[in-house]
Structure formats: structure tokens, C-alpha cells
Length: 431
Image (cartoon, rainbow, N blue to C red):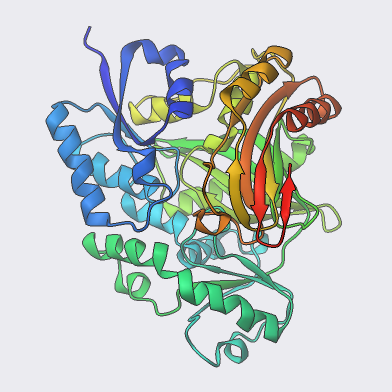
């Protein structure tokens, strides 16, 4: 029997390893439609070039049975373009953009779940009188209509602060917005969206217990299969770790699943994985929808593997092959799992990162430990792309355990064993 030829946008070693560990991998060959280096830490996104590069590689290979991506822009938006060209299962480009364009997404959500979203306004960051026109009282959030990993997202505390935050937005918004608009023009997306001068969105604050619901939609049937808790650093803006399964009551998780179903069906997303970020406000006993991402969160895959015995790459792969995904059972080695993000909050030159030997020693002592180092020696934090607006990510640490206490204890041991040397812009510290 000939193997299924599966192309991935943004293929990297970490996720390839997870894909190859799936039961379905025996019948699949995995190929890079685009390598991770072609979509991350790049100087620009030339959408026409990227689309044509995918087509060239697929045509040269001669056969394709599935296309998928676990990465945000441009991964998610290229999946429907390739699926349509080669007649493969996949979502429509329209529906993907309705998830990813923050203002368009809010407009769709407002039609079906208005009580579960904040007040929002689109605005032009280059308009000198924009603050008065917004008619919003701080604190509130501002962010571009297209970004990922909280890139250029700011919590505004006053009018002066608003205009301070506009400076980096004005300087950097074109990095992602221009290729996003180029793609919309290439595929005839309605002008009222593709030609919007209001390239940013302002939203009233929503708060509470933050979490992410992972799910999929297959032939119009929306399924939610797991909720991951998101814990923040003391600055309240950067994530410190993800934990799975969620500690939220089942009843609250069911309410999130109901809001998700209505929003996903309104948007028209089909034959796609998704993850939806939520806040549960205990005081108001209400769930608030933050954003919809039309893909699995690859940041969660190791946790699913540790708890279920199989990563949720299996959901993505089965959908890409046109199949209904199977149920995830609790067959993993751990009852609880976490993905910790080691960060620095000061800018500087990264002089030394942990060696493979250091990581391998830690792995011998901590069962199931995985460590990813996304930074390279000689890099200045100012040159790191796609970071949030308040910190820089140095390492991703994946740990399994019995409970939260054990996860934190293991993480502290790992941090003690990882050596980073950073020449900070003011002085030198060693972590």
C-alpha cells in the first residue's frame, strides 16, 4: 500500500518527532511545504513567493494527500490555498481569515455570542486624533488586526500611554499587516475588510482565569476535547506556563464549548482544528471569548501526549486526511502536564545558551522532560521576532507529574540546571 504524502507548513524537528510518534504515522510520509526557518524569524513575508514555493515543492514531489499546519500566520492561511489548488480536505480561506482578522472575527462573534465578548472598536493608528474618536475609558487593550503571540499588543492605562504605545505599533505594524493584506488582495477578500484603514482594534478589559479550549470541526460538527489553563507571570501580561487538564469545573468547560460551537458555526470554519482562548470571570460567573485560532496549538502538543498517550497532532492529521478524528483517552504516563516558558524581562545580548549535554543530564533525572531553546548565542533580544510586548522567551520546558506541586518542583530543578548568560543592556547577569 502506498503511503499518504502529508505536507506541513512550518515543519520543524520538534513537531516532526511528535508526528512520527502517532499511530497514523505508519501510513504517512511527512514533507515540508515550508520549513520552519522560512516562516519564523524572517525579515519579511512575501506571500506570492511563499505560495509559489509551496506549489513548486508539491509539484516536484508529484503527489500530495494532505496539507496541514500547527503554526499561526502564514501557516494557517496557506493551508486553504493549497487545499483548494490540489482538491484536498481543508477549511475555506474566508473562514480562516474570519478567525485571524481580529476585527472581522469580533464582528462575526457579535452576531451570535454578544454577551461573551468585550466592547471593541477598530481604529487607524496613524490618525493623530484617534484617542478622542475611540471614546473608550482606560484601561483597555490595543492590538493590530493581525498579529500572533501578543505581538504589538498593549494594555493602555491613560491617553499619554496610548500615544506612547502607538509609536512601536506605527513602526512595526506593516511587518505582518502588509503580507496579510496582500494575501486578501490575491484571493479577492471583500474590500470592506481588505481595504480597511483601521488596522488596529481596541477592546475593553476582560479578566479572570485564562484558558484555551482545543477542538475541531468535521463536516460541520463542532467537537471540544480539552481545556488548557494559561498561567501568567507577575507582570500579568506574559505567560509563565500552560497546564493540562484544566482545574475549571466541568460545567464551566461545557459553557465554553457551547459558546465555541456557536462562534465556529457562524464563522463557517469546517474540516479544521482550532483553539479558542477564554477568560472565566468567577465574580461574574461568566465566560468571555478572547480569540479563535484555526489550528491546534503546537505549544500544547507535548502536554496532550503526556496525559493521553498521544499528541493532538493526531486530530490535525486525521482532519487533513479527510477523516473524523478518534477520541483521546487518558492513556498517558502522567495525570498532569505543563509547558513552562522561561523568560527574561530585560533586553540584552545572549552570550550563552544551555548545551545539549546539560539538557540530556536533566532528562536522565526527570522522566518525560523535553526542552526547546528557541534562541541562539549571539542574538540580541531586540532582534527576536514575534515576542510579546513585555518579555523575551528563552526556553520552553515540558514536564509531566502527579499534580501542580510536583510540576513546579521539577521545573525549578530544570531552571537550576540550564545556563543562560545574557549581557544586559545595562549590566551583566548570569541566569
